[in-house]
Image (cartoon, rainbow, N blue to C red):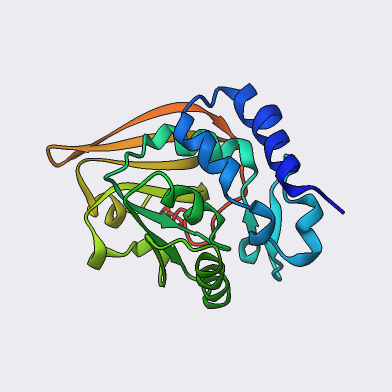
Length: 223
């Protein structure tokens, strides 16, 4: 039988600390949240490997959903600089693992998921884990969730070709949006910040994660 507590510690020591993640609160959250409970039962033995894990199969690559590999997830979360008083929107929360981790860093988290089945499972898992400062909502991920905003942090769970302007509009003054922006075969971990009505951006590092459906660029027509 797998010792998941040991696997969790090994994940943090071998995948997280060795890749520039130094935020103590984030490391503590990764040590506390049982990742194996947020994946399908058949995948639990693989919950802590350094690969994305499939959460939902689909007819095409665009329909499939993944649990992000621990290392890029941790680096993106650190980039967001989530504080204990922050309100966070977790877009594409899927199984709820990311929401559970971010809830240990923030005052409250809204996990937004387009897939009703995944959202239902995420809600049940958060209840089972006693996460009381997070809620799961279902809706169009590209539209965000304006009714609960504005947000201090918006975290996008997967690679995107573009960030919709509707999401920037839901950031509080000084708020941050973190996303892996697709740039050819390699994504760019990008920090966007809303200041004085303008949005600045800074590319922090390369990151390779699966795409989040719905965030593809609109095809341009040439006449």
